[in-house]
Image (cartoon, rainbow over all chains, first blue to last red; front, side, top):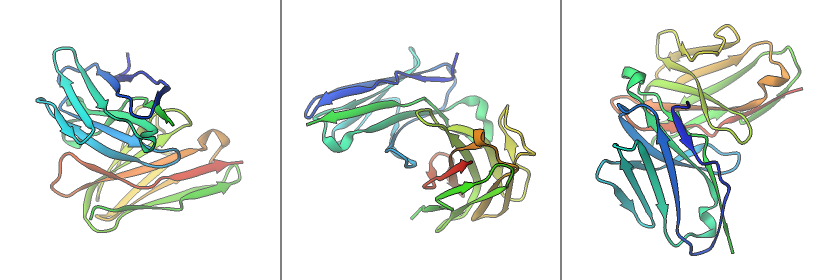
Length: 113
Length: 116
C-alpha cells in the first residue's frame, strides 16, 4: 500500500463549482500535512498546511481526520485559474529528523468556462 | 525571501554523458536540501536527502553511484546524473529547508532532462 494515496482524477468542473479532494495516508503517526498546487511543467507550490482543527484560506478549506487518516481540500467558487494538479504531502514519523515530504500522486483539476 | 534556483532549467544530452544540476538557495541558508524526480503524470519521488557537509541519504532503489550529490555549502547542492540513459529523462526538482525551519520546504523551478 502506498504511504499517501490520492484519486488521480481528472476532475472537470464548471466555473463556480465547489470541488473536494481527499487524500489518505497509511502511517497513523504521521506528523504534518500539506496541500501543494503544481502547474504543468512547474515546481509544486505550497497551497496550505493542514492543521488538526481545520483551516481556511479564502476559497480553500483544508481538513484533517486523524481517526480515518485522511486529509481533504475543498475549493469553493472555483476559478479558471484553479486548474492545476493538487498534491497532498505528508511528513511521516519514519522520516525522523530529516522530516522528508511524501507526496501523493496528485489530482488533476480542470475548471471549465 | 526563500527563493531557490536551479540550473540549468532544461538540458538535452546524448546517452552516456554526465549532467550536473545545481540547486541554490538565493536568500537563505539551507542545512538540508532534497532531490526529487518526477516522471510525466506521476508524483514527485524523493531521491535523496542532502545535508551540508555530509554524505547524502539515498532512498531505496536510487543508485548513489549514478546520482552523485554534493552539498558543499549552505546554499548549494549539486546532483550529477552519471552516464545518463534515456530512462533517466525526467523532471528533477530540488527543495531546500531553511536553517531553523523544520516544516516548510522551498522548491526550485525544476530541471527537465532529456537523454537522447
